[in-house]
Image (cartoon, rainbow, N blue to C red):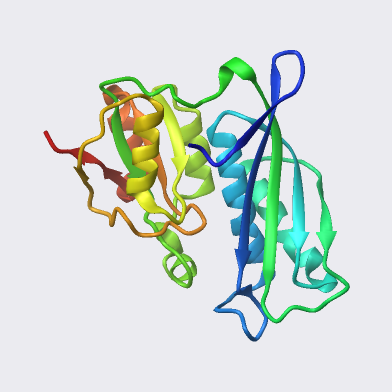
Length: 238
């Protein structure tokens, strides 16, 4: 099951909603991971947009929930705008800040809203005979900044979205590669068997630092050329 909500709208269109949140990550003394707020918002927006775009939706607005403090608003918006710039998206930001009470740890939520034609969803379209791979490495916490060169870049993600022989793209979250693969295969009515990969199958991928793709074998060379050393094929046992 994809981490997006489809809401019937009008004239064959649907609203698409995707969200991400983070807690205990920021600039407060009790935060477990210390990073500037623009980076916190950048990665939260990254996840929400990747979820939205991967199913074929067009983004129209983003909602920011700021549980840090009023003064963090502009920094958070700066991070979201950076994500938009990398994806070449220009949409409005709205939201709310907690100004009545102070918190001892940071918390931020980002919701992306878009639309899609009902019969053009990029879900459950992987056929039998497709191949599977992971692009980028699963990282979480401090690793996200320390090993940022191993994260799938948004520019590469955008390129992969345009590849006609890539069937589905699934941002990998905290449940890891194996879980997302299982969900993808089940959604397509494909038999599930054990598999192997050079990456840890059960490690958290944090803010979607890696993605799962299904693709036609004919495009593997092109995908490898684009992803370079971030390409990790999934091998299924006979």
